[in-house]
Amino acid sequence: MTVEKDFICMDTIVMIRVVSGKPKQEQVQSILRAAGQFYRVEQSCSRFDSGSELMRLPDKTDVPIRVSPVLFSAIQFAVSAAAETGGKFDPSIGRSLEKRGFNRNYLTGERIHSDEVHPAQATYRDIVVNPVNRTITLRKPMVIDLGAVAKGMAIDLAAAELRNEGYEHFLVNAGGDIFAAGRNEQKEPWKIGIRHPVHHDEIAGTVRLENAAICTSGGYERPSSVLPGEHHLLDPLSGHSPSQLSSCSVIAPFAMLADAFSTAAIVLGPDEGIKKMEEMGLDCLMITRDMNVTSTKKFKEAGSWNPVL
Image 1 (cartoon, one colour):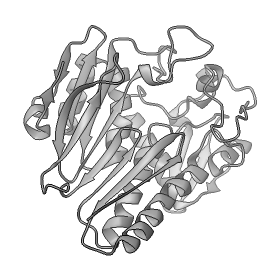
Image 2: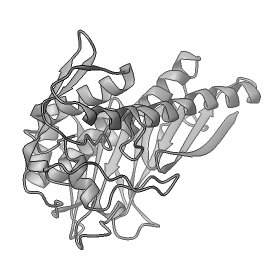
Image 3: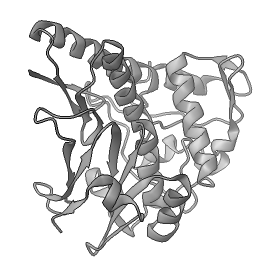
């Protein structure tokens, strides 16, 4: 039996599908508990809610602040990803994103306007994480953005919830960022479509996944409303949106890793990005602005890539 539920959270449509022999109502309750993980992450990590735990952090600098396990894990991972990419991925860019028009709460319509902070004054190196005391210390004023981490974390927590309840076959899909566990209704690996970066109602190709995550980043998703030609992905070092790639899809063992590094690879660009993904052992597919496709060596085999382009 297959049970599927959709809901809206984190400014996207989330779909959870379970394949199980358990009674339908039991499956529905399990899906609802898994969905609760998305709301939990949103309450802790949202940059678009002035009352969220994340947005209370900038109130103090040079003071260790004990935070929830969810927020600590998200920030710790984001800082690690920033170090891995030499700052091409940087969670300290929240204020820059606000200036680009990415500051609207999708539920209330409220615009978040943080106190004036000069983005060049702070980087990820000014975020100090202390795992012993589970504290975060900001050395300089900043607005932390966890947009490339939080959704993947929520997917992983939802997947863990389902696994803890004994489910082996399910799909968690948050706006195209996906974790696929086990197999589908036909007892085959899940077939996942990768969206065409130009013709949005079409797919560029499909992959087959089993117990893995795939996340796709692309500037086409959210153009800036105030800066023509710019979008929600930002190169922290240049201060501009990267322009070489239309989209990048990364397959990884868990969604938070795929989420963060699909974003990082867009900023790194095709050459440096592929090199970094190869170093990390991640499968990656990139589509350039002129619709050329490039990938890591193992992507085609590991992901059962079936191109449409």
